[in-house]
Length: 76
Image 1 (cartoon, helix red, strand yellow):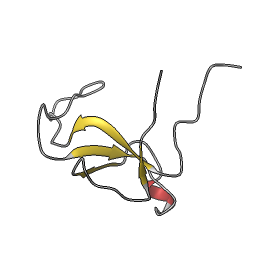
Image 2 (image 1 turned 180 degrees about the vertical axis):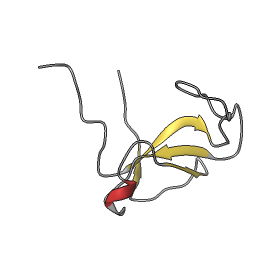
Image 3 (image 1 turned 135 degrees about the vertical axis):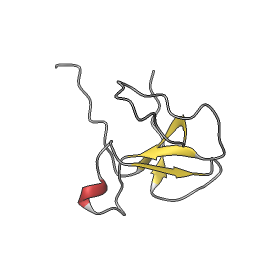
Image 4 (image 1 turned 30 degrees about the horizontal axis):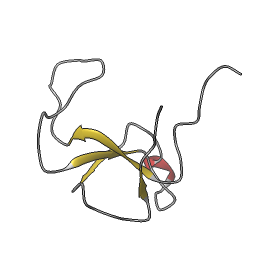
């Protein structure tokens, strides 16, 4: 009704961002690294303890990694 959707699911979600440090200055929607070898994945999954099941949790992995707790979301 309000156009809001649940954005947390049963798997960590791959992001387009390269993994790297953020600027030390305060930012809104920081961009992160412009290149790298690891991509960011966020959230938490069925394998995680409750504390990790939030979008502010950021991990990294090689783009070719395949695990049953990693996924992605298609947005149109």
